[in-house]
Image (cartoon, rainbow, N blue to C red; front, top):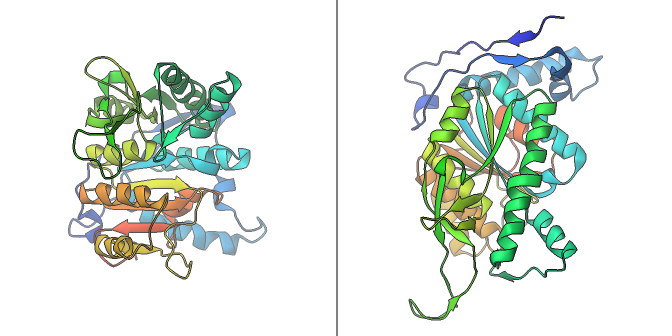
Length: 350
């Protein structure tokens, strides 16, 4: 039996269109190769209605067309975490979503977390997890476990899942290709002066710089990069870095069109608990000042704001508990979660 080759032709957009008014790199998408036994079942992704009702399916596919045109050849960085990494059906759905995005000419780049898996392995070896301000205290023994779990077990499981559904994923960490240069994160106790009362976090790092060469090479070769949030310092030491932070900074460095942060919440909620689907930078700051946005949502929102301020067109905090959340956020009018953009209007094609 002959292999199946599926090609995607470039889709033209009007040069004056608002859809092109963002600082992104548009690259042609090469053909995808699927061996017969690994051709993904893309009908499952579109056919949310009974198969006996094609009239209900056609509008869904038509709705996706302007989004496919807009995102064709552009980079979308996805922070993969939460329930989407635990529930088996959600995991399979995420893998199919990413493969379909690549098939229609997008360049998905995945940055993943793995906190619960790290905690489980530490517990198995009898080591207690300790946190300060939400950051895991990471001594020399713990960083070995972190690197083994993030760069090994979790990373390769995601790669295998995507490849099983017809994609060509490559797993790497920030240490590969000198991609993420990190430095030790310095945390001060609340109320202390600069240089005083420093909290020792061990191998917890922050990003000093990102070299995107290895990701660019993988994109050009039609691969899907899957990145563990681990970096190396100038001294060669390994540092564990927050995955949201890595995804946001990488999106800026790559000139990504969109950043998607998968979470275990519907998105940003107002004071009445209602979902806010579209927010400008100014409106987000208002909600922070009024303490509507607090707790664990605050760092995610700041990550999204930093990405938009750095040139990413939009950043979305999406509910990863929703089946096919990534695909729905990318290819539908309503999306999933809260989209943060440069202006007050929600940036959706007509």
